[in-house]
Image (cartoon, rainbow, N blue to C red; front, side, top):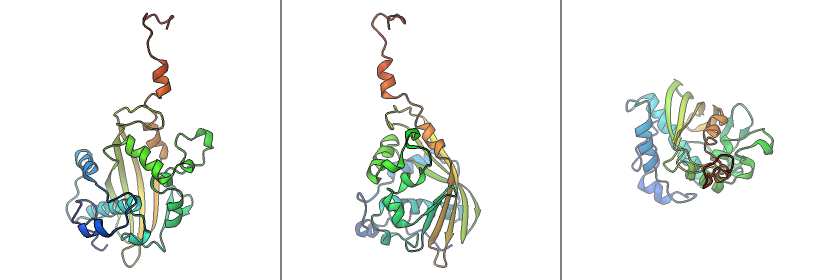
Length: 237
């Protein structure tokens, strides 16, 4: 795998040099990873040696996620080939770069579901890029950190196990914050071409593992209805 690290602005992600920050077309301004990097350093379970395959894969995955979430123009992507790129979740249909953009990217892609709309706690079909980013940034104000737990194979086909985590310190879809740790585990497979550009990604994870952690808090309606009466008598209340 070609050396990915072209840092200068972030310890764990490439292509965030001062020039990159200035010349890239960002969706909502240059990203700031100070808070999530602190969360990562405090909560990670693995510290990979500098230059190891695991560290390189972790940098690649974090850099790809940075580009996917923050870059407005796929032509600015440096980790992948936007003309060839495909991504699939849990063995279902694959999306092109343009299709990912149409469904609102990021969380909307990972939380695709075949459940009927009436049973969807989070409905990716009704969310936009902006609404999904607002929802999860409100819930995880310190970010949703990522670490690589294990690398099973190296390039050109990289297979790895990952852990995402954050603390529900803000509300989500009418549920009060719990302050609890919310985790998501899964496996990823990256296929690289002869230029070390990503051309295909498959992610396997359980969306319910993430969403169930965000449903633990009481709904605001429940909290309002459980206000004790002045008498303190359960029957009068």
